[in-house]
Image (cartoon, rainbow, N blue to C red; front, side):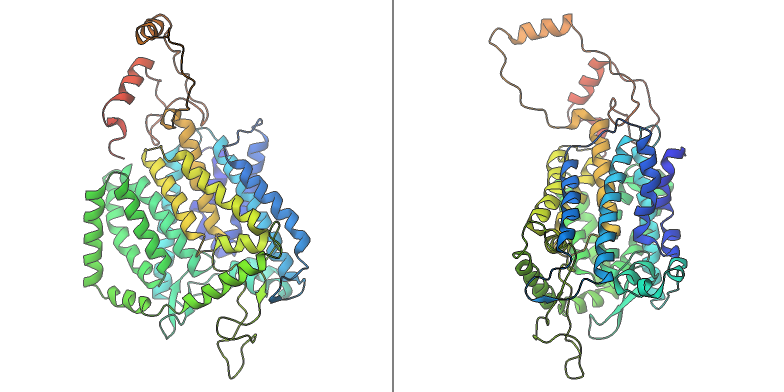
Length: 496
């Protein structure tokens, strides 16, 4: 592996180590430093279409710091250390993610083939399944990380910071009316585990099944049923819906029979297993709906008082969905003050950056979905599916910290793929030619002036690559390449 690739390999393949050190989700900030060094040495830097929206999002978040000391109506709190730390952490993550996208897009295909990056995500999927099983079998497992030992009490004792740096196997919650473990290792909380495993599952199937040999396909056949155990025990309805959306998407984009058969077999196996009872209990206990409705409504109301730049960080609301009092008491143990923006990245962006910031966030991923929808390669289909999941999960999952890293890596894969295969992008509409340019004249012109031979690739913007996992080959003759791409079904990618 080439030296320039080590930062992304260390982030994905080495994630268990980051988690054990107490740096888990914040590891992206650490590896962004060597990524920035690689970028600095490769100027001028190529930038993908739509990246300006992310830069504006980052700039808007910098301006929102002006509102950190303010409280919108219906909320309370002082300008505390926790509020400032939360702001600085999010700003650092947003900036690190921008560096990571540019870093990935400026690595050549020789340095980092597409399939290598996809399979690194598959390695993290295996790690996530292992962490989920740990949360199911040993939910009480936890330990003090080295980073946690080094931090002073006033910092490490902050509840937000502690969630990020203290490794735990599961969260114990009373979702079913009694204490139930919800897997979270190796991520920061249970909902992060749910959103991340659904995104990683997409890339695992592409890297280990679509482009996998016999041994990798056997691993997929074994690991997917095993992954179903922590997926069900996660009690995560958003994750379950996300998996349903993924199946519907794959059926819509050309594999209805295969997907339908897989869904029927998986559903039958679930109904015949003890896991079906857990699913039924979770659906019968939707108690979190009221909490979400309260925080979402309160978030929108608070945002209206600072619609352009937001308030820089979350705020605590007075009371909850059932009472106007705040905090737990002997006569009201369920009373509390849920932080606004804690139920989804959209709501977090609203309270921290206003309606303007939320529009930039949605526009970034929605624009990527529109631009890359026509890429029908396996990586293109997988990447656009992730963009759909991002737009769905923003209503129910907080993207910070680890989830956004996976979202932006998926975006970078789409960008690299479009540069590798520019012929898969929708053709731009051209002005009509003059009448004298008849079909016969065009044919004579093409015969007299043949198209130039494509140059060998040296960067993501190069000539079409035969497959994400293969070594570079001499570029085909233009006429042969054109005939192959125009063949019915494009047999070259028919397996995707």
